[in-house]
Amino acid sequence: MGRGPLKEDQDAFGHMLWAHYRGEKVFEIIERDDGYVDATDPSKYFSGYEDWPMIQKKAIEFVKGRVLDVGCGAGRHSIYFQNKGFDVLGIDVSPLAIKICELRGLKNAKVMAVEVLNFKPNSFDTIIMLGNNFGLFGDFKKPKGSLKDSIK
Image (cartoon, rainbow, N blue to C red; front, side):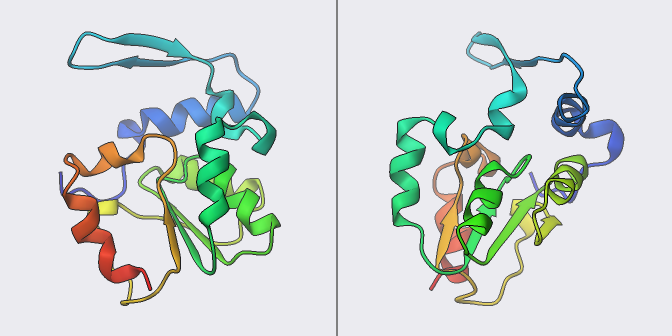
């Protein structure tokens, strides 16, 4: 992969989020290599805790200290933790997603590709990747290598 932030014409996800944020009727269409196709409402990327899947509600019980939200999208998890008093950094490769996070009140959000993380060792107590973000790495071994030094 090895890419930096997306250019505007590459940011399909960001444009979808932006259109939804502005109140337009849009859908997220997913088509995978295995033939699976689905169309969903992007409101899930803006949902509050009460609408999160049970697995995400369970996972957040383990969050502590300084939090890195990898692939934060529209900021639903980052904003939740910020409102609970956590020190949160949300990162996403999509400049439009980060713009939305900022407009929604996230204080610490950066456009950053997961492949080029450059945090000092022990920068975070918790790293979250909720919402299918392990696919950002291309294989299951890369997250451990890329993120392990950043966590306390």
